[in-house]
Image 1: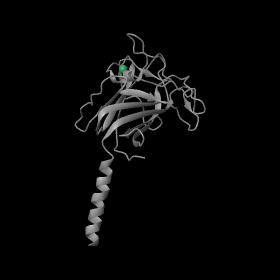
Image 2 (image 1 turned 90 degrees about the horizontal axis):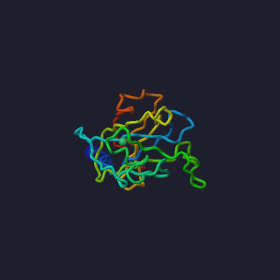
Image 3 (image 1 turned 90 degrees about the vertical axis):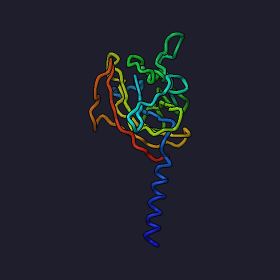
Image 4 (image 1 turned 30 degrees about the vertical axis):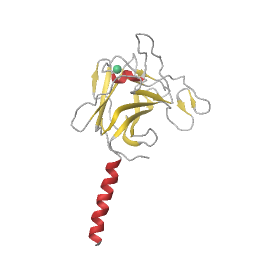
Length: 199
Ligand SMILES: [Ca+2]
């Protein structure tokens, strides 16, 4: 009987773990840039792959990619996408998301920095349209005349309700060299994503 309940507990644990994947939303939070004083981080591309190695298609639209607690440094205008978030989904390494380093919110954010935590405030959310399991990602940064807005430390999280988030991957330049390759004017980094547990 004890053995049976042990087996049952294994199934319960497995079932619980699987319940937290897949995710519909993936968030990128950049904690620091190459330039320590920079909060205007920029990213030229962000792509996710499923467990068959196929790139998950996400339309490059305002509703598919947006910023929480931040805004684009250059807003979109007629015929120009500025440095808006959906530039990371367009497959073009020359168009970028760049965060406005002057963004402030009374008592919460000052010049793009979170006042309650030692990190940058802006978070990029990608809506994958449907919940799905993504197992790896590629991020393209961009050398914009200088390297100081390159992400240096970042975290990727997954969610289905935009409230509870699971840690999928954390990266720190101190522990792994960047980049893995060059794309256009950018640098490419690829990494695996774990399932994570919602918190
Ligand atoms: Ca782009």
